Length: 585
Image 1 (cartoon, rainbow, N blue to C red):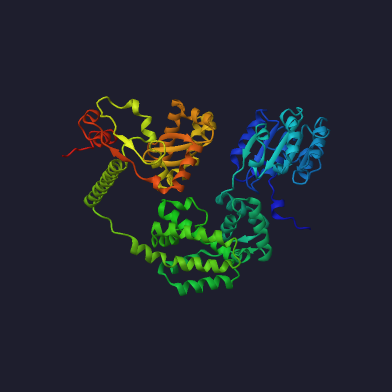
Image 2 (cartoon, helix red, strand yellow):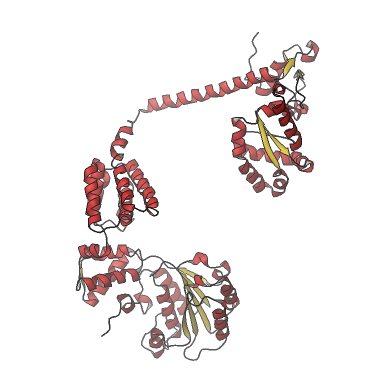
């Protein structure tokens, strides 16, 4: 008798035979029982989890001669013929081979005709994400309002590739990966029925290799059973699949914690002599240290991983590492695994990664300081606060010194605030300069390459995006300007077009822009604008005659004009406030 592959021979023929999808099975059975079936379903999930099998079982359940019933009888003529694929009204279409618009148009024409052999027509479209955009468009109307005698079941492993218009017309069911426990139970049952003697460890390892897919697990079992003449052992599974026993990983971890470089090289050479691939070793080693981290950090972590066979051995090994060591090991392995994908000699990178890790334990022990008492921690915090206050005071002193040396008024930004000065403030000092520049502009020119301007310029795209998010109409005007300098708390933006500048300068618009600048740049900034042509003319003038960069000179005003005080004192009071300025004779 011809041999049939295990995954075909043991394909579920009823809902009760399915493994690990109880949330879907119960919903479908209740829908059949209460006659609330939909005209279109979407089954999505990883490969080998039962999507196509569930679709065929549903087709049998709605067309069973003893039904519609929550379970197909599998005895009547309709059930048997649907199982054999001999019913013309239950059509399974492979969208990967029939993905064009012509095939879908042909399907749309045939949908109109009533079923001839069973109660309801069922169209199962497998790998539906492979359809072209035109094919999806041709299917939409029929999918939304098919004749009452038609049901569509779409199956896919990549639901994100389907148009939202298709998904919204279907009831969606997400198939999950089958758990290790459910897979192991099913594999044991099949081994008993097929007369295969299999060790429990071998069955668990096969289940882990399948990554939650029942079909993959049965294919591996079928392959190994053929190799071992009906007796499946854990070692045979490892030999056949190229797997690595956990004892070898434990030896690598032990060698790593001891920092034994020579022993590590011997272990790697042994793995390569056994025919193991470097990239597979790296992947399994990552899983091993990930499981160690889970066991170390989370109580009962054996429930969170399906690779731990001996929890006691894993627990002992996990205690040998600190959390920071495990984090660094995983990070390093992940980095080298990425590089191995493009390397001509992946084995060399695997060796380098493990040799590099041999230095981590000693480094971590030397770098870990002993915990300081709480009083010392408090003292450190106080010291940090004092240092921060000193830095702030030094910055204020520098601002005051720059103001006294470079002139305190006449800058473009001060002109915006003249009307808001208190009446009690003394009049600003008169300013004279040899430069033929607008008042204060030479200071902006001098700061056009400052670190402060560079920092603002690097974040300017974020400022523009922030303005756009707040109000797109303001962004449309503001985006035509470009930052050219930063002077203290003012950002100078130059515009090519005067109307763009005037619209930006409107109080409401300017306030919004300054709010965004404060949020993005981390401190309050004021917006100062000018025309780009004027800016370029002045920059070129400075380049042609460097003497024009001569600093401003203060010309003392009369006692009556200054109110009896030195003018820079009044300006300092205005800039920093009464609380921060102390006047000494």
